[in-house]
Length: 232
Image (cartoon, rainbow, N blue to C red; front, side, top):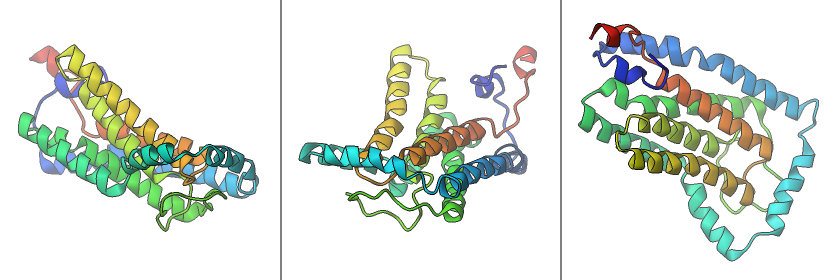
């Protein structure tokens, strides 16, 4: 059984209690060291690097090149990472997958991904407390610090989990299109957040790491029997 085919190789139905235990052991607890690494990076930026002020040059570069068209496009791109959008899309896709597969334990993967990511993000941003870039911000920013990017982390967690799910799509053309769109979505969010002055580059990069790791943890949260396929 490979990591990507784990859900196809073992389609057995878990108990709710067993799935909950696996969630804690295989997704929640492994997110603790992820949180530690993210906070450590943030504190290095804030203390030894004194906020890494040189990064503001990147944000000023984007600010100097803003146009009305660019502002309109990036406003839409940035909205893809909004909390309400991420939750709505995650719940909608989970319901569609539940309807098609009747496998609730598989349908919850994207919801686990965004929930674990959000938990790591909220606590880390409170601990680090990094100021926003010193440029004009085009969006009202939430009452959290700049590090790491919640928009990038949330959209990455959501759409990387969709990419993993899309590997099960039988039609190769549809599969490639869905994967391409899902890869592009968080990249667009990242560009928009830089363009609109909401985050530094390192905020974006660590947001990617947070989202990717949480999506992978969600994909592997449930124990699967590696010998199930051979015994079928």
